[in-house]
Amino acid sequence: MAGQESYAGLGQYPSKYRKLALKSWLRMAAVFLVVLGLGYVGFSSFRPTSKAALAIDPRLESKFCDIPHPGRPLIQYVLMIDAGSTGSRIHVYKFNYCKDHAMLEDEIFLQIKPGLSSFGDDAAGAARSLDGLMEAALKGVPESLHACTPIAVKATAGLRMLGDEKSDRILAAITDRLTKNYRFKLIPKGAVEIMDGKDEGIYAWITVNYLLGTLGSSEHKTAATFDLGGGSTQIVFEPKFEVRDPTKGGPRMEPGEHRYVMAYGGQNYTLYQHSYLGFGLNEARKKIKTLIAQEASDSGKLSVEHPCFPAGFRELVPLNGGKSQVTVMGITKDSATPSSPEACYKEARRILNKDVTCTVQPCSFNGVYQPPLDKTFAENPFYIFSYFYDRTYPLGVRDEFKLADVKALMEKVCKHDTALFASKEQQEEVGAENQYCMDLSFQYALLRDGVGMADDRVVRSTRKIKDAETGWCLGASLAVLDQNRYCKPGY
Image 1 (cartoon, rainbow, N blue to C red):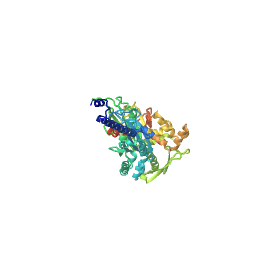
Image 2: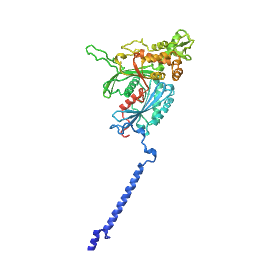
Image 3: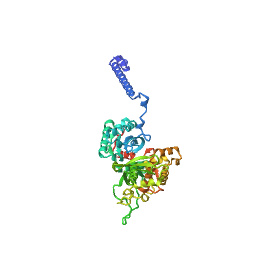
Image 4: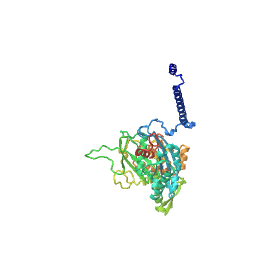
């Protein structure tokens, strides 16, 4: 018995204790093998299967931060389609939420022609025309974010002039195609619509001042914007009035639809805005040509040469609803009508309707009230863009200049002599576009005689600020993000 006890104490006696120890060891070995196997399987499931899998899609990352503001996604995309009178354009905006508000990080821009209004009764064709733009969206936005990326299609003055019935059918066809063919999220309100001219101007103002960093500052050194489109033009600025004396009254903005109040970054802004429908560049061309043709018709002429146009220009201009027409031609070297910059400028001034009754003074043109620029907006920056840029930049008027420089360019172009331009590129530019004189005459008249800008006023014209396109699209996209939340934190 004692021997058995001594063996048992050493653990060497072949009794039930040895059997129990062996079973425990086997169980531990089995568990170890299972854990090892599961670990291998788990590790294998996370192992990259290719070199491509090693890289994170940079479209899902921000170059400014790794961790988003609490409650926000790191990256949020917005798709904004500008369906203008001459063509459609898409902006694929990439925003980050490194801070508590959306910050623009990148942009993809693509444009196509013609515009939606050119399709007339072919609503389905108009909708299909946007497919090329949507391809840019599909490539630019990571597939994992398609369902939470908002999209909007905003048509402007061109489609508005097509009439309610045709334009409504086109908008309905676009809505249907976007819903059925793409996973992007239509914004809750006004996803596909003709945008109010007032909103177009306000969004452009937000875009420019957002990019300049002037929003949210107590100094209120905001820039004015003047956007010349094809069918309409919009002006927006923050006028500064003298402090009112409650006993004597004093300067102030008159009440009306032109008064727009908004808040941003803890600051309140009272803006003046107006959209002049029918005074975009394309509509102005029609008005000037019709005016020239009507004057000739009233004199019993079936054709007329005019200094607005160079030699070789010839266009049939319909009158009286198409019942008659007059041939408008450019002047030649031996023409009885001399080249005269003043002659075209005169026609451009006439279409502004400065003689229309001004019911609420002071007025800009066409009987529209506007606070005077020289008294209420004398110092802050003034940005002009779109067709203003397209007609001045190629001919050497760059970035920052005085209105007098536009006048000088107008007078130079209206001499219809390409040899006056030093570079071959500028000569080819003027020679390829036979409506330059008329366009610049209208633009100068619009700024000088229309809104009352002085010749020595410094203006700025650009297509981009900080690598982002100017115009209303960015401002509209910021409003979209301000009104709703789309992608969830952590995607």
